Amino acid sequence: MSGKPKPGDIGPDGRDYRSSLTARKGRKIDPTPFDGVRTPPRQNLFLLPLVHLICWLNTAGYGLKIRKENMAGVKPPYLLLGSHHSFMDFFVTPLAVWPHRANYISELEGFEAFGEQIYRQVGCLGTRKFISDLPLVRNIKKVVDRGDIIVIYPEARYSNVGTNSRLTLSLAKLARMLRVPVVTLVMDGNHLQSPIWNLTPRKEVRLRATMKCILKPEQMAAMSAKEILAVMQRELTYDDYRYQREAKLRISFPRRAEGLHMPLYMCRECGAEFRMESGGAVLRCKECGAAWEMDEYGTLHRTSPGAGGSSPGSLFIPDYYEWERGQVHAEIERGEYHFDQKVRVEALPGTKNFIALGEGRLTHGEKGFSLTFRGYMEDRERTLFFESKASPSIHTEYDYRGEGQCVTLSTPDCTYFLFPLEEGFNATKIQFAAEYFYWKSQGE
View 1 (cartoon, rainbow, N blue to C red):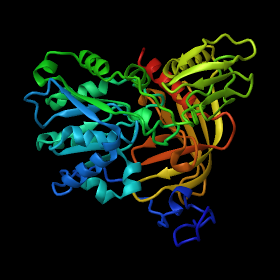
View 2 (spheres, rainbow, N blue to C red):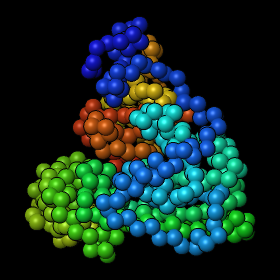
View 3 (cartoon, one colour):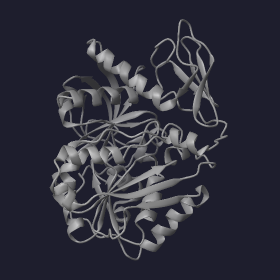
View 4 (cartoon, rainbow, N blue to C red):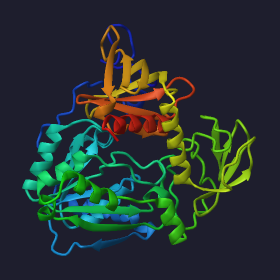
């Protein structure tokens, strides 16, 4: 760990509990869990102009255009469901709802990074990803009851390859319970501008967003939750690479494929896993030598065939990604999937800091995840179990704050960031398996 030891950094057993994610900031360890019961304040009225200015400055160079459909007469309170591509989403959304105040559902990482008081004043409600959070539901109801907009990004993580994720029935039940209009904000270009696998901004990208009222309370009163969900899923379907082709957005950024080997971790030619590499505009398999070049419109073209492969000469990135998902499903159905690896564990109990917990062990199978580790100031190992049926997906990162790939698992009181300590760890594959096991547990 970097930095000099400070009081509270070293436990009674001599272990160093300072996180590399936190030590750079010189913060003392604070294991206090986040207070999710506390009623969120309304968005600070005096900060609204500043928030608007910051958002305008961050989008001004990308030609953002916001179109509104079926919004005549729709005023707060309402539920806004946003597509989730990148950090740019948080600059586009306030511009779309301007001049109205809104509260935003946010993971606790943002609170830790920018400070709890600032985040609360700009209207954020803290939660953890992919858990059941009844206090959050109560606070959402309070926001609506006082006449404000509540903003949710229901996919709960950035899109890996610019396409949407599957939504769950709980979202439809929440919307019907709130008895307010449901509005979607589908953003195009945000993933292209800064994909999660390579965050370098692409200056040539043009952004657009469509804000649309899709359901009124009186409509939902006559619909089942499944019918409401079907409307939401249809309206929150997107594909940034299709948008790029149709809008003829040329991205000449020379390193445009760098990092693509993380979501596209399996070779389409020989099927080897975790042997892909990328650099410049090229994605390549180290196992068989197959290579694809990403053109300026986001399509992959095979430039070198692999041994015995028969992949198409041209590939769309989302199609490649879904092919991988199918391979994971087939592996599970053959009874061959099992994950069991050493991981580095970083805990985020509240909004103050990460806590390094050292080495742990993560296993994954049909029933769920098991995480074995020693908690903060604990002298013996314990194991947490995360049931497959309780979580529709898992949060994935490809280079979290410069620390590399990780996945996260959460309890109501803590989020655990799990980084690989062995070869064969890929966040995308773990995510595919977690989603398969969840939907299988739901009978789908």
